[in-house]
Image (tube, rainbow, N blue to C red):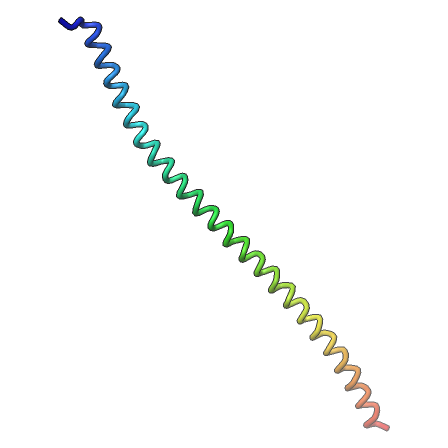
Length: 89
């Protein structure tokens, strides 16, 4: 014959096992979501780094082109002044 204390203890242990299993199920799902989120964050970070590098390179290129354009304008201005002076003489 099973003692009442043993029966209660078995029921409590069984319920505890079921509760642990339920918590484990949801924890596994949460950890899977966390891993997916981490992968997405790393992918996004690498793409952002590529875009930042591309932006920096384009900014440097545009700055160089504007400096070249400024130098060309100065040269043309000097040449126009020289030609204007020659025409007046």
